Length: 291
Length: 328
Image (cartoon, rainbow over all chains, first blue to last red; front, side, top):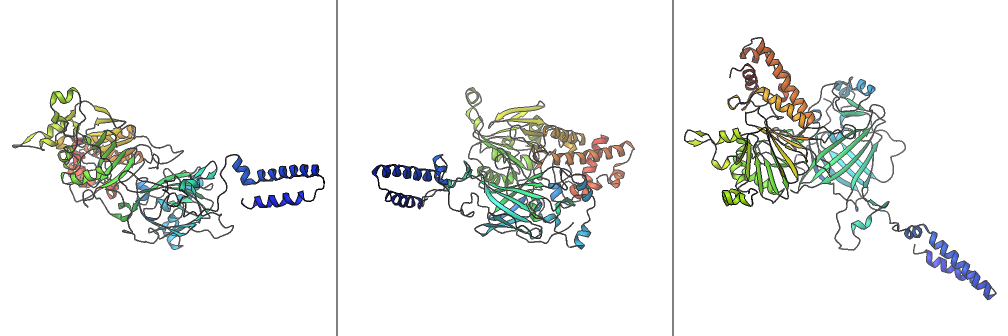
């Protein structure tokens, strides 16, 4: 934006010096000024500003603008679907999961011994199910654009990538490929960066927002330990949000929406709760278990 | 527990918590720590002070459903103070067991009753110096009954507001509180429904860590437990499956994890099935010993049964048997 004004001035001087008649010079100057004004007006950012939109911002650093501090250790609080999560349900018990007939057929063939024999004992620890596993989470920044989420149950690691899109071709993984963004920050279609306070030392108001994660490229796995399936075509959308009750505890709520045209008749939605720990106490990595 | 209405939701097996991940078992007062669990709206659950305690907070003050063990009163008060600095106005006793009502006196005396106008003038200013304790009349009768030369419980622990009808309703902190007489565990139990927050505090009618405790000597019955669970199912509404498979009415059991209607359904089915099995055996003339030997609870024992502690599986089967055969 700063460089456009000198450029327009240089252009104006060059044209005026080439005219011989005074009238022509005046007319030419008017035309040039009008043209310059048009150029100035149609500059995209200026045009946006004319209509009340904020000027474009430099690329943002996801870590710097995080509206939530999700880092630290969290422990599952099993308050929903206890009987499906704390114990392994019987084969064929897929209550509340919107399985289609094919999904039910597959669920009815669940064979944990077979999974163990084939090295697939982590099928119920994939991205579509891992937050429902009673576990502890360790969340940290891998770098300014990647959040790392580790679980002690099943010893899984998820990488949540801010920006970009999944690689065109890559081998499916239990945790798939996750694209993350801070959502709920937008105002009038633009990131409301002013909410973060630009003046040095200025108090930073608490911004609103949450972490949205979309995961694809997963290996087929289980939504529940008893073989309730999701396919390689499944995608997972998750919202990570946090709140503090009056007593100062911090809670993480992960809303998970699993969409799977192969096995589900409609999205499978759950919300899962974690409580913040002050330290790593209780962290106990354990391998995946098929049963 | 969505953040906004995150009211929402939470646990049990004694607390629940971490527990889930740590694999620890029932923590009722066992670890000496009182955990605070947000439930829904302005309702919280305290775990670890004996029976689960329900806490409702707001501008008018604090309401507790049950008060926990007497020995845990200081910790209960400390936990309540992390949620609100307003005075404790009400304690609702769901029953008179020591792990529910033991903290009545110590906690009530830190609070104050909402009084004013002619009320204080008529009965004395001291009437407002403690929180009101609400229960069904039978609870007051038992607590105040002389046992030998002493009352069963100290006078400061007695209910100050006993009701005798099927229910008692009042408005507090922007919510309507409905206290229902629900005999089953004893003949004086209550359940408490927070209508706006959509939370039910179920008392001993519903617990997730064992078979229901039926105290025949205090008027309990298996049919009362079944009726109470059916009432819970009437009060509770599950979340809309089309939008979410969770939320809906939350249920705080007397012991164990926070639950929703689906959990009550599972428990109600279990209790009903066992009742029907024992009922059939009673009709066939089987003796208690024969019924116990037939193990009518066998398929549920991994979840609810135990051979040790204050409420064993045999004790439960015996209570069901005697309740149905009316031989107690």
